[in-house]
Image 1 (cartoon, helix red, strand yellow):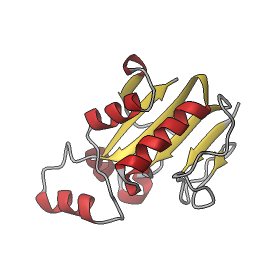
Image 2: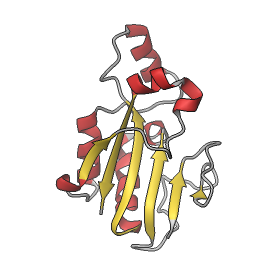
Image 3: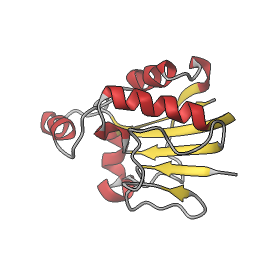
Length: 149
């Protein structure tokens, strides 16, 4: 089983192939067609522009095996009620994109995933970003989505 995490930062998952700045995800991924079982990108894609994100999602679709899944965790404004918190999420941390659940699903659909195989999910044991910002803040500002090829 081949499990790959992209944009991992310091969150290295044991037994997975973990890549951060050692793989430029704005370029074609260095995996063969239909060669990866699971992809995880947690709080990484928001650092790219929409064109780069769509191309990355297309690459995720290309490298996943039939039945394989990509899990995407990104910041969202949907539950934020504090204006300063919203501005911080948009303007700070190197973010170029902030998603809504619908925009994330549409981007995955545009990349080739079928709408019926894209769903919003809750926190997974694989998710680690909450350890950096706290579970309460993570509940407010993170959305998670899985798409199956």
